Structures are given as structure tokens and as C-alpha cells.
Length: 332
Image 1: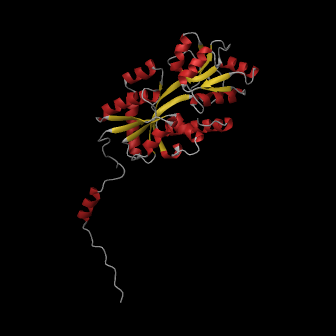
Image 2: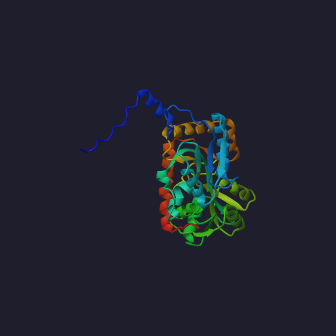
Image 3: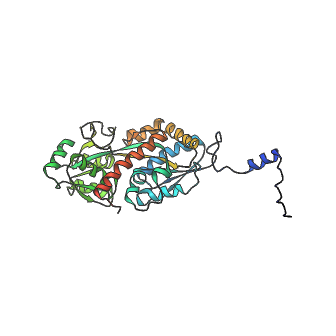
């Protein structure tokens, strides 16, 4: 006769409850406190840059709200992808947050053949913090006072106007390619190793025009060596309220905003995502934060929802992906 298998002993309900409670949950449960320990923010760029400054200003206010220290970790390289990859390797519990940027979330997947993550599936946008204004700047000798003048000049001399960028595949490169498509005239790309040398080339006349963040452009405008003919973003900048946007000047083109936000792994519980979002939005409403971003730096404060940020990441990805493919842009 075959030997019957022994059945497991029954466990009393009270004892079972104790055993279940002793097992740590992989995800935060509704109603649990957050955070109860230090929170790490990975900034995928070098210290002192825009992403670093923006993240630390908001991070300080999160620390004050939560009563927990923020631990900052700068992991630059490969257009921000190294830092985002590091964030995604951490537990999806809200205790590791990434500083989001277009280069790592909306551009990288179109430039690199083997990206270790899918920005549209693996990353969850938490909140857009600010939009930094991009300007269309020309060398002072270029006879253009607005975007229509510049478009007419480019069409009259196809392939003769050149533009500088901070490097192949950068947002400054992609923006100018989008502009060339929008006006129906090709422009010649002159890549530099960084924004500063490209702007120096604009000031000296090595290049005719450049899409660049307004802040570093301003000194060259004030010196009379460059001129801003439009704001490339979705709204005017408080740093140059008299300069109209591309859309206001009648050009149909994907707005170019420097979008900076906070992101987490997509598996992060929605309750935690919402808590980080709410704390960030509250931080952005503080008078000293508004003064720093809007008055001192000329940034546009956003403070949107996680779904809004996610849609913006996808919209930028769709627009940038098309021009990257059309222009055959490759990562350097």
C-alpha cells in the first residue's frame, strides 16, 4: 500500500496573524507613514548645473516638510542615463528619487541602441518642477529681429546659415533641427563640446544662431554680441517678458522647454508617488522658492500631476524621436 503524504499542521488564526505581520511588505501599504528614514535623490548630472540646483532647492523644502534628511548623489554621464539607471536599480519604495530631464527621458531612447531601461515604461513621472526658458539667439551681425526675419533669411540662402549646439543629440541640436523642419530650410550643424564654447562661438560669429537656455545667453545679449529673436518654449520668460514665443510669432513647432522634474521607478506605489507630488507642489508655492526660481533664475514653476508629467515625457519623446530619425542624429 502506498504511503500517504502527511498534511501540514493547521496554524491557529492568531498565530498566523503574527506571522504575516512579521513579514516586511515589499510595498508601502495605504495609510503607512512616509518617509520614516532619509530619502536619496540621484541627480544624473554634475554638481552645480541646472538640474542639481533645481533639485536641491526643492529637496531642502521636502526635508523640512518630512523631518528627514535628503541625501544627494550626483551620477553624471551619458546624457543623464547613468543616473536614471541607478535610480531604477533601487527598491521602488519612494526612498530613491531621480531628477528627471529630457535628455534621459525623451531623447536617450532614440540615440542609444542599447539603453538599459525604457523611459516610457520603467520610469514614473512624479512632478514637473520648472520649465527653463530656451531662447533662439543669433549673432549680432545676423540681420534678423524676429523669427520671421530669420526664417526668410534661411530660406533665401538654403544651407548657408549654421547653428551651434552643445553636442550631437543635445536638446540644442534637436531644437534647431526641428526649427529647420518647421521653416522648410536646412541649416548646417556645428557641434561644440558643451554650451559655454557654443555660446562663445555665437558671440564671436563662428555660428549664426543657437537654441540655448536663456540664462547663459543673457550676458552675450547685454554685451551687444548676440540678440534673442524668440523664446522657444511654451510660455514667455519672466527674465525677458518682452520677448515673444515661437507660437506667438506664428511658427508651428514643438515648444522647446527645459523640463526638470522628479521621477521614480514605475513600480512605486501610487500612494507614495502622490505624497511626493503633494509635498513638491507645496514646496513650489513657498515665497522663497518662487523668488529663487522665477525672479532670480527666470524659470517657470509648474507643479503638475504625475499623469501630466508622464504625458509631457511621451509628447517630447514622440517629437524628438521623429527628428532624430529624420536627421540621422547619433550619440557622440
